[in-house]
Image (cartoon, rainbow, N blue to C red; front, side, top):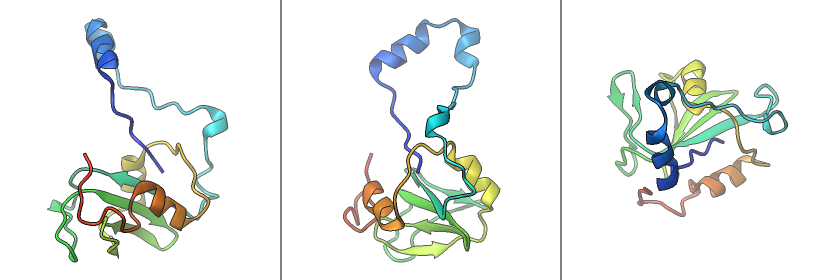
Length: 133
């Protein structure tokens, strides 16, 4: 699972104090070795995608509730799946495993099972009909 942390006001001020060359450099996503997970040994990978998701020039929309954002993107041995907060899940054959890896970023958290991942990210139905900001 991948969690993006928001920048605090203090971090934003530090960024503007840097020279122009340093501000243009990409952020490092280097995860410490003891936190790294071998992606070949896990049964599934998932991450929350808070905004709109565009695949093959089409904005993803939930066929059950009509939501157009707040997705959980899941990669399992069967392929890539999209899950809405209303718990509707469908396979997404247009998203390749490579595109999934590009969107996901580094693995920073490990859930003991799929149901724990659903609960911890808020895709177990608890937040059905809400959009978190």
